[in-house]
Amino acid sequence: MAVMTELSRVMDSVCKDKGINRDEIVMAVEEAVLSAAQKLYRMQDMDKELEVHFNDQDGDVELFEFKTVVEDIEDPGAEIDLEEAQTLDPEAEIGDQIGVTINPEFTRIAIQNAKQRILQSIKEAEGKVIYEEYKNRKGDLISGIVRRVERRNIIVDLGRTEAFLPPEHQVPREYYKPKERLRGILIDIKETKRGPQLILSRSHRDFVKKLFESEVPEIGEQIVDIKAISRDAGGRTKIAVTSIDPDVDPVGACVGMRGARVQNVIQELKGEKIDIVPWSPDQARFACNALSPARVNKVIIDDENKAMEIIVDDDQLSLAIGRRGQNVRLASQLTDWKIDIKTDSQVKLEQNEIVTLLMTLPNVKEVTANLLYSEGFQNLEDVAFADPETLIKAGGLKDEEEAEKLQTAARFALKDKLEQMTFTEEPAPEAEPEPESEPGPTPESEEESQPEQE
Image 1 (cartoon, rainbow, N blue to C red):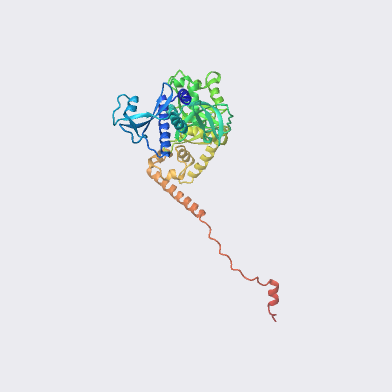
Image 2: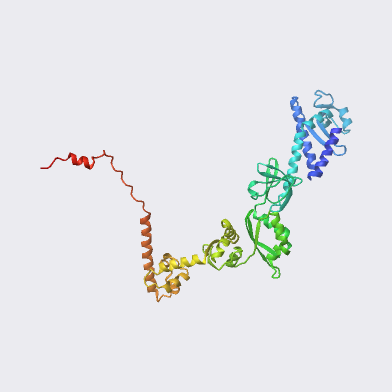
């Protein structure tokens, strides 16, 4: 039959193009035709036991109904006599169930009715193949061709399937036209009713990591390691690298000869700036590297709060902070430490204010105040609640008694300061509204109303 030959050809094409196992397609076709045939019989108020078989040799779908072998037929729709049964199966006996081929025209109608379900089954089988292919490729670079844009989602043709680049994973100021090539990383794959949905990203920091891995052989050979990445997609990326081989410069390896490697990455990122800095286990040194290109004078570390105070020259402040705070924000993300940047002049001004404050305490001279400041005593609280021995060593005090006197004075000063703050913060009582009264007489009228005195 022409219909059957065409069906066989389509099945072969689907197997080749979609990579689906032929047995899965045959099973899907048989199930769909069987379901359609049973539905047709139920529409005729008949209930038959049916079976479908796809003949690979001639590409035919054969539909069978089962009849019981009897001597005398009472129900032609469900029974077959022994003689006719033996023409189909020489070993047939009375009481056996034998499959009888149904009218080919009925089979053709069943196939036409099952067409949509066959296509759906093939689509489901194709979805399973795609999901199995991509489920272990999360985080990999994926390349495709832009097909269209739907509700700000960029649809990317990957060949056998499509992927989505949603708005939240797009880079600001990047625009794509149909037929343009696009690369991104596969960050997720979701199973939906329409099949697997592949989600790409170009804004994720791992996209930059994968681009460097593809450009720098030393990373693939595990000589150079990317320790950390921070990214402001479309603006700037900072990447910290290190090398297990002392003869290999990790920054130079990523930059490449005449900057060729990093330029390839920048070109893919549409001109996004990239800072490649050496990673260091010394957090202070690493922070200085992360703030590149700004120069750092001093780093004060607060391990307990995982915070740093970084001192720079006045002319380096804007460079260290960056436009809209971008440089210090990315450095903070790269190091995973809170970073506060101050200039030398700001620090000196603060030091003078704190030294002056400490000198208000009894027996604290300028030298002692400077010593206390340099040891981290930068407010009254630090002095009031410090360990006495630490205070003695820091301020060059004589003994514990002198330290206790200093702390007592600091506590009183702190108490007075808090009371003043509380007093100034108390809201003033609302003024009671004056009672309304009729306007009184003017001074002139009062004089006129007074009786004359003799």
